[in-house]
Length: 273
Ligand code: NAP
Image 1: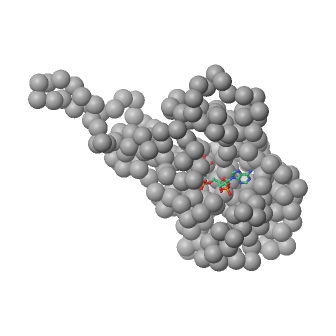
Image 2: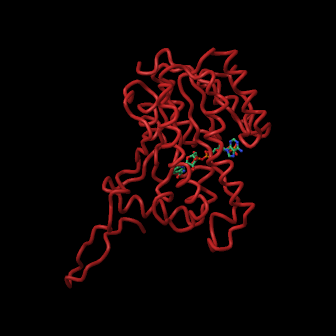
Image 3: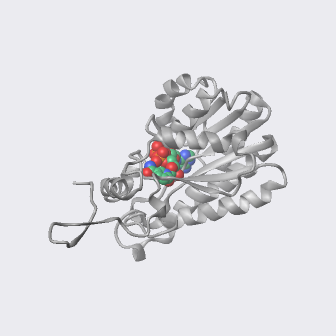
């Protein structure tokens, strides 16, 4: 039981398809005690059975990260339940629809600020406000995507947010290293979730990834969950500031593999439709 004795909070479970659910489940299976959060009352009812299943029916708290007072209240609840916590999972992102399709040049200042606030600053603020209750050797994990490193069609504003998030991970990791706290990100391959549904032509992204990743498949929330659990456990005690790819190897490809047709003409290897 790699997580026996560890207590932590998971932000970002919307349903059982959420990446955060995959991470929470992997941690629970390895003996961790959890608390989870929901965005607002509309999601509370949906999350109650999930909290029960994860063994934290009595530790389900509201936390809209755009409201600092809710992060403070979360800290107080966690302190009451656990005293100290050993890990935080930040699996949250949001960008207004205008930022996830159409022309990048047309993005408004308001959409830009909202995306950066919810998807990037929230990692700093959650860390800042929960820091007094972090145990020695605590581990913090967030979620990124390759669109923060290279251009991905339609990922647009979220790509800029993920670039900022990845650098935030590195600066936080350096700063908190002196306190023994580790901060890492998983850069996951595309997975069909609620948040992903907002990205233009997402189903094409899935096909492209599966066709061109060395492992020739898309990743699952169980696979991301297992890698997340490793980064939250003592197995990764010397790992911090890392952007760990869980994408079937897609990020290593500089060019799609080429096949040749019967006339010796090169064609792109394509497993999709
Ligand atoms: P998801 O299930 O929709 O999870 C996104 C979560 O963010 C939801 O629980 C959502 O809450 C929450 N959220 C949004 N605004 C919030 C706010 N103001 N305060 C608190 N929570 C808020 O989708 P997901 O794909 O698992 O996304 C989790 C993370 O993985 C995100 O950072 C995403 O960018 C990243 N990621 C996803 C993929 C992918 O292909 N799916 C790939 C790489 C990285 P509500 O649902 O209640 O609004």
